[in-house]
Image (cartoon, rainbow, N blue to C red; front, side, top):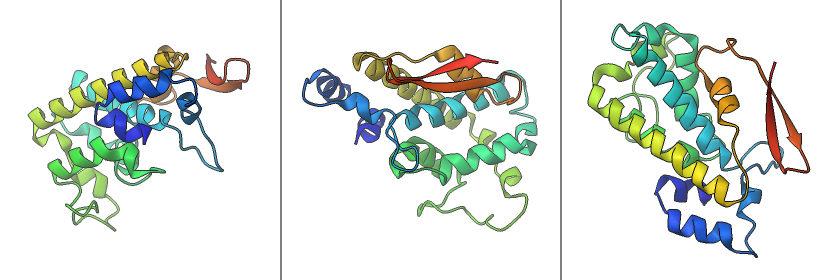
Length: 190
């Protein structure tokens, strides 16, 4: 529910819920029932895609399609389209990938399934305007997430989050640990 409301920009409802003394919406940020399903997953995937495509654009690899040869791109496409605990956390990504022709209207891969190099054949840069709108949508989603988390009385460590989701993994090493007294994960640079 929280994931969809974040995507649909229903901030008035979310902020009202966050302030309600009998609705512990902050507990939905990191719930874990054998696997990780909290609304923080919306931020993680949005930040990963935002960081990857901005880095690819800023370094000139977007136009030269070098990004499509990177393993991190293949992994990102998979995560954006299929690897989610809930379809709610991938709504903006699935819509973007459908608009690019990467996913069909049914949400399945468009013709490249089974091909070892499928991710290298799908280039999101073909429609730069569409990519820019998607990037703005991701930024807005990350911003709304931050507003909600702050309203819940918590705060993200954005420096650590950016380091964790930086597309050139291995450049920064981050270790996370749960701090019970703060009821949140704290990241440490290694």
